[in-house]
Structure formats: structure tokens, C-alpha cells
Length: 313
Image 1 (cartoon, rainbow, N blue to C red):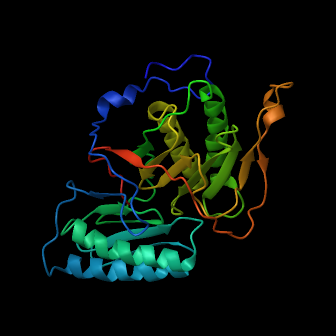
Image 2 (cartoon, one colour; image 1 turned 45 degrees about the horizontal axis):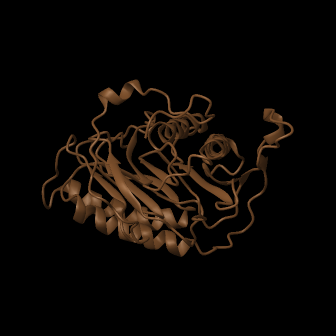
């Protein structure tokens, strides 16, 4: 696809950093089931631990405590196990903000089992699922929160050329609004869902953003803003996309995919008054989850990992 028209309100800009980032396109990937991992990163830079070592014992203890603690602590916990710097393991888990306790626990149990099987003897790893993520490392660097995107997935279907300008406008308003709302709303969960009115054949665009809760709200907002920049840069005109990061992530689709009602709603711009105040987002309280059924879910067919870019722990 050629360069988008310059009048588009949701333009990809030139990405100078692209030259410094190694991208690899993998084989097509269908949408996994909820208990299957989307992606994993087994870090090579931190080395391996040995079988029956103190580090292995501590990792096992940490993973067990994370699954339990994450469920009991509202879907997030960070912890460590170890007596000396050489054998201490640091880790955290995060469940998606709209999943229930049972789904959260099931995802965390799956993650703690899978990460050892999929990243054997690695001192640092991160694994993502639809409902949760898990990461662990031999280093503690939470203050150095990274907005680096570790991987990205998108829907290969495109929005029609006729609908693209409005789609980009509504998507841009929604995702930018969600990045700020997740970081600064009073719940402290660093999570937000939204919907933007769109067109007759696609009534709404749906979005979700979330940060790990081990960071300041300013870091969360910056992390999500960088993720929004990525969807502008690489997913122009796509009907859906998601980013996978160790500290934050986002997703948008043209069908419902989250369980809560929208926390942020973007109305259609009024034709008679195109000023920014005419289409100001309307923020509403989020009621209890209603768990609708997502229908018409299209396949995610591509994934781009950012090579060895883990800013873990």
C-alpha cells in the first residue's frame, strides 16, 4: 500500500528508529485459544541456569507464588525469591483487567507451566496469553521501565479506501484517549477499554490498553503512547492489531473482544461542527462485566517479534 494521504488525522510518520530495529516476519499464525500463548521471548542475553541449581529451585518457588498471589491480588503481583544476587529470581504476572478470577488463575497456572517448558533453563523469559502475561529475570530493574514493543500482530484485512479517513480519525481519538485514561483514571489498575462509533457496516471500533502496575502513571502513559505510535506506523488501515510489550500492551478490533462495557466512548464527529470540542470523548463509569460473546473474529495472520529487545524486570 502506498503512503497514506497527508490529510489523514491518523498518519504514520517516518520512523527513524526502524533502521536500528531488526524485524523478522514469521509464518502465518491463526488466533490461538485462550489457554495457548501468543508469543514468548526466551532471552539469550542473560544466559542459562543449570539443572538442580539454587536458581532453578528459586524459580520454581517464585512461579508457584506468582500464580497464587496474582489471583488473590486483583490480577497483578511482583515478587522475588532468593538470598544472594546470584541466585535471586524476580518476576511478575498480570491478568487482563476484564477477566474474572477463575480465568485469571487458569491463565497464570498455564503460564507458569509453559514458560519452563518453552524456555528451558533460561534465566530470563516473558510469555503472553490472551488473558495474562508472565515475566521473570535474574535482574531487578523496575525503575527502568521500557516502552519497547516485543512483538506485534495484525489482521491482514484492510478498511476500504472510502472509509479509511473516518476510521483513522476515530481510531486515533480512541487509542490516544485510552492511553491517558488508563494511566490517570482513579481506579489505579492502569487499564482501560473503549469504543468509537464508525460506520453502518462496521458500527464500532473497540480498543483495550493496559500497563503492568509496577510503574508510575507517567511511565504507563508514555509506554502506551509509544504503542499507539506503532499502530500508526505499521498497521495503517488494518481492521485490527495488537502489540505485545513487557510493560504495556494494546489491542483494537472491529468486533467486541473484551468483557467489560466501554470505559471511554468516542461519538461520530458532527458534520456541522468539525471543531475538536464537537467530538470530545465521553467518559462513562464501567459497570460490572456482562461477558458478551465475540462473533466474527477474524484471524491474526502475521507476527513481528522485535529481535532480542527484552527490557525485562
